[in-house]
Length: 95
Image 1 (cartoon, rainbow, N blue to C red):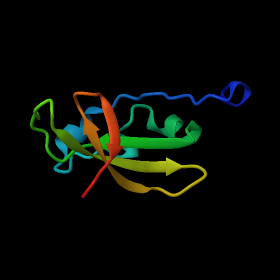
Image 2: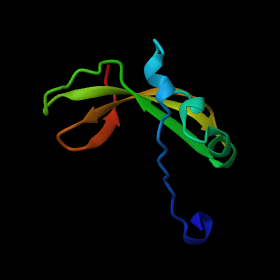
Image 3: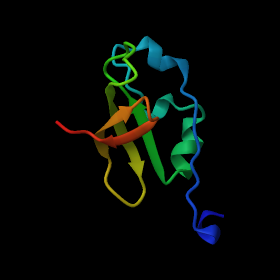
Image 4: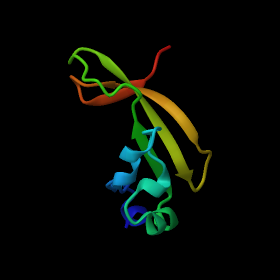
């Protein structure tokens, strides 16, 4: 369907509770519910996390880690984005 209509399809997945019990709270692919079928079928899997779990003020940008855990046609790794809460958008992170 995505190829036929030339549109991306974005699906969200719930995390299992195991991530809360680890010292490192950043999610990994095995934390996804039904992760075996997701890993097999997905072209790209991106896992979002943040280091600071405290609430921020509405005018502040928050650093978000985007773990590209799977990319069928490209590289994997972690990138950093800034999340602008008051606009509900992501932008390039400026160091």
